[in-house]
Image (cartoon, rainbow, N blue to C red; front, side, top):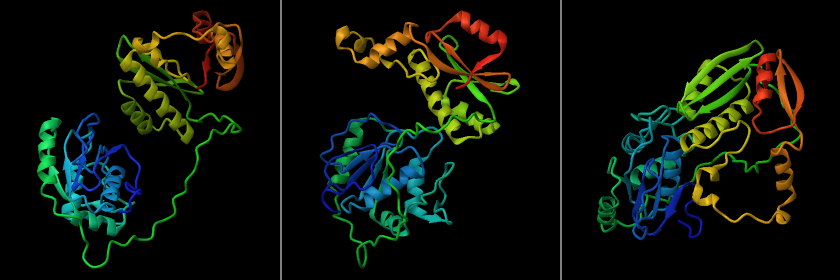
Length: 338
């Protein structure tokens, strides 16, 4: 381990005593408060592939770590502890490096090198505390294995050699203002979470009108249904739906008003943050003043609509909900394109 470089892979974890022989994986349990003076690294893991790869890479680059304690609860439908135990016990097989005997949909560690896998299997002993979330109970096990420290792992022969890796491009994300909007030929969707019913209703429209009405309480089950039915054909459309469904689920869970294509007013659901001193009107930035004009219906903004399967444009002078406009829109068959 080179000082200042470890951990080598970013992730959601806490760093403590880098000389400690103990690492802790809390599975899907995020809020688990443990003192870090006797723990080298503590973090969650929710998938049997990328998540395990990060654990392996961060452990084999710190030879001081000799024990990996599992605690907390697995994420639904995943088997992290069982997969890592199988990785240590039986290794991998096939071109995608599937973990032998592991459960789960895709327990593959294709981004790990053979040396990393074999070093991990020899370096670490797994300690299992399934479903344990009691901090005191976990701390006792941590202290026990901290005091058993066998010393840094020393591979036989030369130190672990790094295999040739393919180059990984570092790309800064940016918004493409010049990209023209292209409608998905499979249609478009209208998302409506209902606080009263506790469900999200998603309407799928194509050129012929309404085709599917999908209901559910969670974004995951809805977008899996969309994919299963083959209702999207463009990558950006699928990404858009994932984002909007996640917003709708969050709004439903916390009682926040949801408007498709608009940000969530999270502060409205948190009264303790809302009661704050408002800045003087003269000090408000121009952008805020412009938004206020739009919200008050004193400024017009462009909206895209679909009529009889063809894209048309109109201007709606009020951003707020307008029941009269909505009634007319429905009667003439005018659909908002999202």
